[in-house]
Image (cartoon, rainbow, N blue to C red):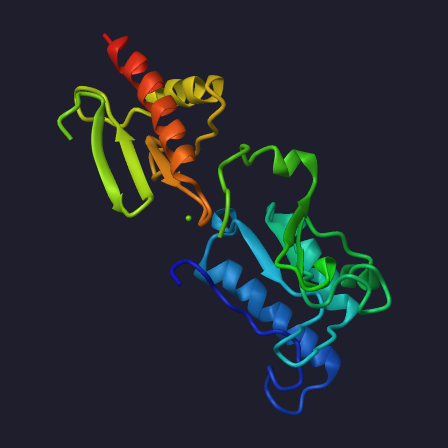
Length: 231
């Protein structure tokens, strides 16, 4: 995957042979600092993502020094620290969250599996300051000849309608007006595409024909009103 970098975890089988725990800790931290010095600028790093206690990699418990040092490195460079607590969290380490064993608080935490008793549920936990930077509806799940509608594409009932201005430039502002009109007609919509100017139709498996007809009627009414009002 492009722009994703890896550094060693301080496990016995993940570092050069013969190292003590302290040496493995120093080695892993050295590799992390070397990466930030010679490979990628710290200001270009969005986050450091790690398990505070490694799961599938062999149930490796790092030293307090390692976890606390990673936190200090993130604080020094303004990098978000994300802990994957999906396997190690929810009481399995004697604490509610594995990070509590190291007296370290991450910026973001991902959890799942044990929190739902077998149901397919997960969560991303963070502070309001961080979560408010992600507008509602930005992420919802696991992704013609009209002067304003520049493209209709898809397959089956997975369809997107793309809005553009007369000069061909993306028109997320037109979509926003259509969205408002749909909401007034009790229809929730979500955009898509890198420019945010596409309106997606992604119905559930048990959708009824009457519901599709009702949704299309709402979309037709508000989109026509919006498009006709364009200069």
